[in-house]
Length: 399
Image (cartoon, rainbow, N blue to C red):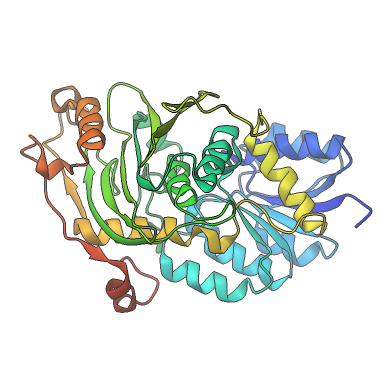
């Protein structure tokens, strides 16, 4: 292809604004042409609408009209609400378009399998952009080169507080189901999903490989007055034999930046959220090329792939299978979402008394679930063996 990639954007508000900014940069470089966008909130986004239309970008109120009336499109980006990812991506595939699907891909493993059947030409990219960050790429390089030895465990923990306004920003926030469609909104399945996806990536044997979990044990809790969960602890084993632990929350009062640690037979390495430094206790030096903006890097990669200038992207749709399996199995293992405490006058539990930051750190350090610690509200789950559990679920509903 010797012309700019013609792109449409579905979803302009929220994180869609980041896609607009990235596309403006790529357009200035002559790599893409943003031809059209779709978003029903044209009045709320009136200023952005005027700016886009002044550049000749056409605005539609729904994705179906955009797909039907824009036959010259090469690709679309989907930055729509989670519960619409399945239907929009399926529609875009039917038009034989390349798709940049914002993370998380879809809530349910059944939906993912349905999309994989449709995506026969592997045209769907999923925007887990942290995979493209310099620390993650360098860490994966060390792992594949054997610098850390045999990988024994991968652990992520962190506290990323969210306010009542966060859950009020959109009607699907904090929901399990919205408008009759699955959402499964929460820290592991939305805002902090990059970190769980990174575990799957680092568990892959080769640079482009992603690992799959073989068993999962988890506990999901609700502290705020929401429908979904805002606290999760999860552990299990990967196909490689390495164990993994994932402990995060939106309900803590204090921030504890996400930290990812890989332990091998020779030593360990770690990544801390918002830090460009990759730490290790082996004296290893970094050699991976620094990337200041993994989101923009992911977009450039997608454009090159769609222009047949690159053989793959960082995360194809099939590469998210481990992530979706882990989150779905976690819900099944937990036996649903357990409520912690009784809400106070503002509808929230006093999380300061729960010492969530300390509990999260302890869980990650000791490899324990909350029910195994000094938490009288802890509810133990069951171990889910993926190979025997997966054939037992069917239909587009929560396992």
